Image (cartoon, rainbow, N blue to C red; front, side):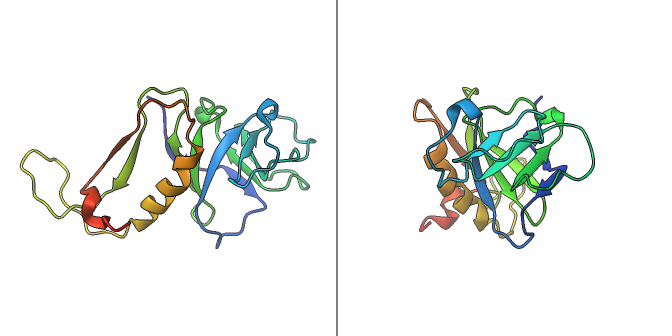
Length: 169
């Protein structure tokens, strides 16, 4: 089973107070003109390369520990267990907690968004008890992610607790 979330192993150029970000991965051959959606470039293990024009930050997948070299700009490093990530995938990243989630995988035929973990029902068939937590950030993350999803995607699922709790959103 693929791990779809975790902690980044290193970052460079991010401030802990920055808000959650939604990032679409792009390879150097898929370089955008200019990326307003905070696109990432998946760099090889060549740390002498600066962030290419059109990319606001880089994603590096490697198991080496230690600080990332200076002059790299904004970099997120993940362990090699996430080496399945590829062009067109979408991640959610929170600089303060250094947590990330894979929101969408272009190579997967089955993508879904968890809308909320909250629920105000006690359905007999549900094994998940209702939770009373503030997960409103999830809807904001989905709104940012949807425009980044590959236009050729045939279907997306929306799941979770009771998605209509925030029906105005």
